[in-house]
Image (cartoon, rainbow, N blue to C red):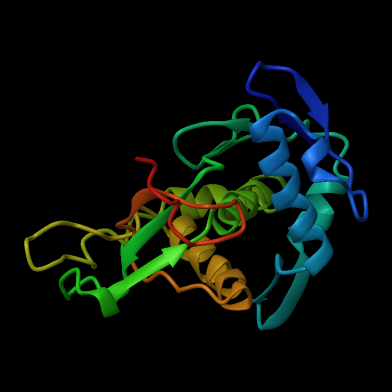
Length: 208
């Protein structure tokens, strides 16, 4: 696994205990390293699901960090996504997302949910794992659009998950969110907002 810096240099990632993150000059490399170190150290990316009535349980980050064949790369972006063509994860390291917990209700304070940048990175890492290690099922889920049209808000906006892969991955990501003390998502609608740190949902302080 490697990280692309803001000036397009590539840095191989390996876990180092008690790493001095302040010594990393590049903001994106620093934030991504903090996030990856956290995921490795805490095992919050250990996911469980049933397949053919057999309970599967494994730590996604351990498997991906140990992968030396697929050249997995995390690159800076203003959105979060996974590109299977080049095994590339796009990571918005400075922003979390806010969403409605219940898509049928308005944007009341109690109906707002928040996920941190590290939680969003975990989501894309799960997509990456599925594509590389569960390819047939991943492709089948990507072509399954039965989830569409099932999450319509009061204004007629479709907040449904676009395919079965997103439905599957959000269930796994919600396991991570629960361990992080963050909110669970039940629909695909979300908006980005700046956070104080890659590991928090707290909004960045405004500069005047």
